[in-house]
Image (cartoon, rainbow, N blue to C red):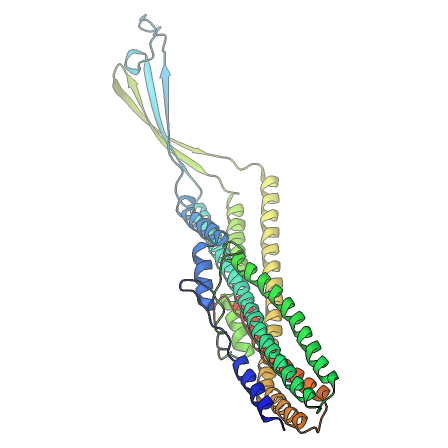
Length: 421
């Protein structure tokens, strides 16, 4: 057995495990929280939704307020025929002037219904803001997990490339001693070329994910990001029934749908109240020769004669209410189905991760060590050693993919719930 060559190979293998850790101070990306904080602070779409929610809230008070009163002034006998004076427009120099102050009064209950409808629309705007945020956060979580996978896959491939280079040196030494054929050296070189090709693909994918994260954060695509240090730990997930209850209670999409139903109900009631008249009350003093000569009061109401028009408006309001309820029911069914699918996917990813860590990866690493020892003793050919190395790489990649798949499923579940678990 060639002990110096074996020692050199083990040294290369040990160094290959060391992956560079760089994180420029102040550069986001090392953790998911740093990205979410930037997105919440500077994403323009989120800021627009926040302002729209604030604007909708300000419409609640005016919706339930009384209309502004009106002031009417009527000048009588401006030609002064009764006094034979010259025509005039000053109230004290004409026959009489009447001042009328009129206050419109909607029918009982209409103001409350308008205010309640505006409140429901305000809640819709707030729900849309929450929905925008949870959707953005879910996309950032998913992209960050994929970015982590790309970085770790590159590190793993570079490790395997260093290992393949060590194997080439090892086979070169054994070939020089006449222990193995030249074909072993060539296979080691082909393996390195294949790994370099895979590395190019992975680096391209990492570049795309880098740009995608910056786009989600509304940063320049080329702005630096720190290397992701770790994935979020997987939380304890409640059972399906508890998660479904959380979804029905907190999902922003369902919240918006329910607020639309509330607004449609209030608008339908308001349309039915339009069968009854609105009022206006007023008071008017009459001025004669510079003094108030008399006072009067008035009551005005509109006559709702166009009942067919109102019936059509009521049917329209009922149809809109039914449509809002149907959309809510459809969204509920779809979201419950998505939750069930993602929960099953999360459990499958956890099982795959446990299987890979508990069996596949240790077995592949032991197999590689056994193949390396057997190759040194001439008991197996180089193709067997190379396949053992590939199995070890696949096992490590499978572990990474299972981790990321669990993170993707978790991000989708949290998007559906509207909050982190």
